[in-house]
Image 1 (tube, rainbow, N blue to C red):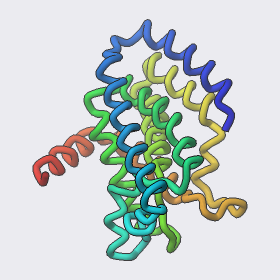
Image 2 (image 1 turned 45 degrees about the vertical axis):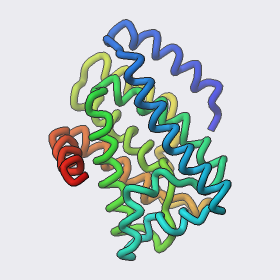
Image 3 (image 1 turned 120 degrees about the horizontal axis):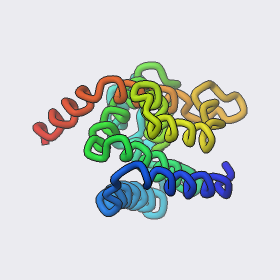
Image 4 (image 1 turned 135 degrees about the vertical axis):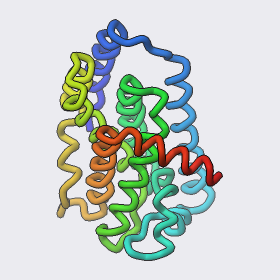
Length: 216
C-alpha cells in the first residue's frame, strides 16, 4: 500500500472535519496511542524475545476449543515487523474516523468487532493460525461505510468518501486470495461484518462492553 497520497487525503480531511466537529484531540489521541502501544509492546516481546511463540499459542484456530482463546488475543499478535507496521497506520486513521462518530463508544465498538470477527473466523475459517489487527481495521471500514448510509449527514458521507478514496482497494482482502493463501480473508470479512453490526446495533456494543466489565 502506498502511503504518500494517503497522507494528503488525511491532512485535507482533518482540515475540513475539524471545521464541522468539536474534537477532543487530547482524549482521542491518548486512546489511539494507548491501543497502538499495547499492540506494539506485545508484538515486539513476542517477536523479539519469544520467537513468535504466542502466534501459535494464542491465535484463533478454527473449530479447535483452545483456538477460542485467540478471539481476544489474536489482534495483539503479528507475524513480523512488516505485518505490524502495515496494520498500524490504517488502525490510527480509521480508528480516528470512528471516534469522529462516537469517541465514547470507540472501545465498545472495537470489542464487538473483535468478538464477531473472531467468532466468525473460528466457526468457518481455514484450519490455520489466524492473527493480526487487520480484522479490527476491516471492522472500522465496515462501521464507517455503514454509518455513511445510516446517518446520511454531510460529515458521515464525507468520512465514508474519504474511506473509499484511501482504502477502497483493500476491500478485495475479504475474498479468498490464491496468490497469498496466508492472508486471513475470513478475519477481514467477519471483522467487516462486525463493524456493520456495531453501526446498526450500537446498544449491542454497549451491552457487551458492560457485561465484560462486570466479569472483570
